[in-house]
Structures are given as structure tokens and as C-alpha cells.
Image 1 (cartoon, rainbow, N blue to C red):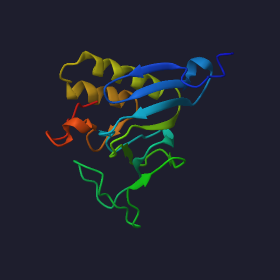
Image 2 (cartoon, one colour):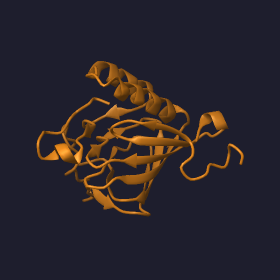
Image 3 (cartoon, rainbow, N blue to C red):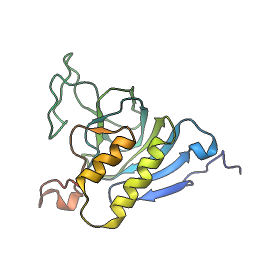
Image 4 (cartoon, helix red, strand yellow):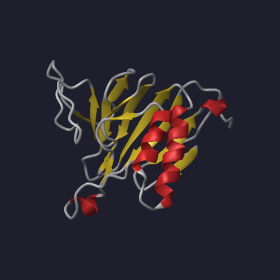
Length: 185
């Protein structure tokens, strides 16, 4: 098999407590689009964010994700879950086969509000911005210590990520016991 055909389960994996990302197509293989398979655990919320020049595509393979891709009538800094667009668009609970395209400048987010992992195909243009972002975020998660929010914000700027609401990861076992964790990643 060539490097251009990737069998099921194959590809470079980055595994953190908050996500499992498998690289499927990368700049190193000649792709201008980075393609990943992402396992989103229950309780993970990427937080609303926007890219000034990147565009993204998400395709739900298994499970369900709450998806947002619009400019709200009013941005709130803590949560995007109740946002509504001036035209009445709201967050969508998306199941298998649903997809979301995000042009540059569009606030967007996803979260797994269920009790089961979800799996999605994620594409980002241009390559390698998200490849490098995922590598650096995996390093931050692997340290297992508190995260410097200023360093995370600087990293996001390098990769065209302007965070609007916090990234949160609260595993289901902690949902009833604690408020949502904000790792800053």
C-alpha cells in the first residue's frame, strides 16, 4: 500500500485526554488541505472561535455533535450554546452524515453533549496550520500541569485561531461533581 492510501485506523495519532486526532492527509504528503479523523469524547467543547483566512469542513461519521457556524446577533464570552443569528439560525444537534462548512471569518464550534464518543472527519485549508496546531496542543495537554493562558493565546494567534468562548473538557464522570474545566487549550 502506498502512503497515499490510508487503511482504516492508520495514520499518525495524537491522543490527549480531550481528543484523539489521526492525520490522514498532510502537507508532508503534498496535500494543500489537512485531513484528520477526530474522536470527540463526551464533555468536550472546542469553544466558539473564528479564523481570518482558514476554512474548515466537518463531517460526522459516528455519534452526535452540537454544531455552530454563523455570526450570532450577540456574541457572549462564556458560552455559544444559546447563540442565535439575526435570521434565526441556532445551534444544530448533528448526527451521522451531517456536515458543516466554515468559510473564513465565520464563528464556529462543536461539542459532544452526549454520553458517547463521536467521530468526525475534519478538513482544514491551508495545510499545515491545523497539523502544527494539533501537535502543539498535544504537547500542552501531555505536560499534565496548569496551562499558561497567555502562551496558549499566543499559540492560537500563530495558527489563525481567535477564540471567542472557552474550550472546555468535562468528562461525564465529572459533569455532576464539578464546574466545566477550562484548560486554555
